[in-house]
Image (spheres, rainbow, N blue to C red):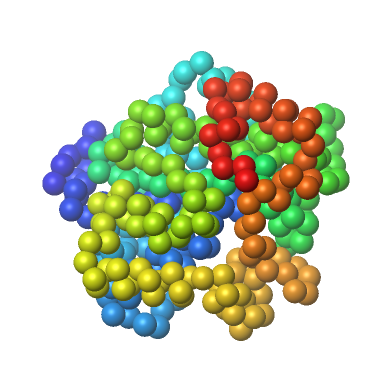
Length: 299
């Protein structure tokens, strides 16, 4: 056991784990995979998906899967981009939906306070993420996803994908992702960024890398079989069957017949929507925070 600066005892043997995703970047995929893998290791075959709970089968004290900035970033970072970062905003609270939960147990989830915490950030390339998020917003049950506020403080309908990018999309992406870029650099044993595109293309490899990062490698046949079976359970065809059986999307946040939480996740959809001028704008905005669009898998 180790003691942190708030006099809480933190177990090295049973780490606390967060999987904090960019919205529209595999959140539900992670929830279903890690739930299935955990339950199968306990020989439990009937279960409900959980995103905020202990994972006895995997062997972690707690795993939360949701959206948020990196824990304790605001207390830690006072570098050259802090004032500019403070000016950015999330136009809807979904980008930081786990914030209150994390703050209530910050002694477990902050790398400043718990040297054993493991934080995974799963992130999609920003161009595809903005396409996917705006498409999802079109039929969201909360109409706030379709509006922004103009310079007079009045509510304004977001007109299309490009309007979303310029008015709120780039700001929201940077506001979340930048926190992990900074914190991963200084706490590389605690925080690791994973690519959504890599997960889509090689799910077994990337989930295995995530489990190794949190200190729970797939190192025997029992775990390998549980991983293979969990990948089948969490596959897109099976998740679609769950939606059909329940008569609603996975998150229950869409209106309209035939809607699904999953829309293929194809890499490079943005090329049919955004112009070279739009991409150049994103590059300029990223450069303001010393981020490079070419660090992402764009196609």
